[in-house]
Amino acid sequence: MARSLLLSLTLGFLFTAVVSARDWNILKQLKGGKTTTSTSQNGVGSLKVSNLNGYCESWRVNVELHNIRDFTVVPQECVWFVQKYMTSSQYEDDVERAVDEAILYLGKTCCEKKKCDGMDAWIFDIDDTLLSTIPYHKSNGCFGGEQLNTTKFEEWQNLGKAPAVPSMVKLFQEIRERGFKIFLVSSRKEYLRSATVENLIEVGYHGWSNLLLRGEEEEKKSVSQYKADVRTWLTSLGYRVWGVMGSQWNSFAGCPVPKRTFKLPNSIYYIA
Image: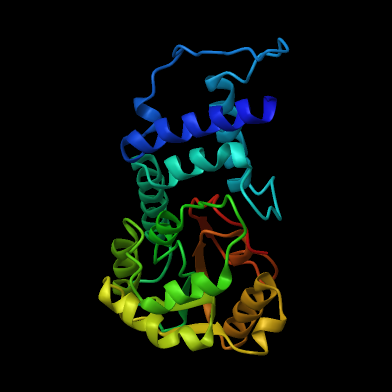
């Protein structure tokens, strides 16, 4: 009985969240909103809406802070919350703020088109950094509530229909115009190269120096090690890696450490 009640409560929250998810923004939320509570037949009170909101927001924030690691699925009671956030204007605002901070940082670097010697580099990840996977999660209805089906996900990637992450085309163009060499370092498999290139160009990205995907040897490594090895290789060639941007902490782990990192929000999945 208690399990059925909890399931009904969760579904009710999910329905309410989906109705207005796109317009959800933390700046628009009213403080001290009314909460409701219900009591089961055995007299145990169910979790208040405000408490569940607070729990799920705390979980999401701690994922972004890298306090919560190695999770395989989003807690079931928070799947609706993650979906609401990742499809909201708040998510877009958070990405835009990261982009603004990156542009401010660019102004402090020594690389300008007239001065660059061709050895100043910037690294971007692809999924949920340049290209959004949100349409995939929408169509499959999971948003982290179940383990990612890599076969289905790669089939979707191979379609080359992912939209650009909001504000990221602007940042990409700004970095390119300043004279940086742009390296795209992704955990995508090598056979997805053609679809990835076509997708990137279609949504407005062009002019990168190299696109690095994982071949058979790279697939034997953890994603973190693979990306760290790419940075080591670039450094050995004499490149100065001024910045790395990604939505997973694996983009920044290991040595050499880049001069600056920019993390985009993504609490749908975790890849080490």
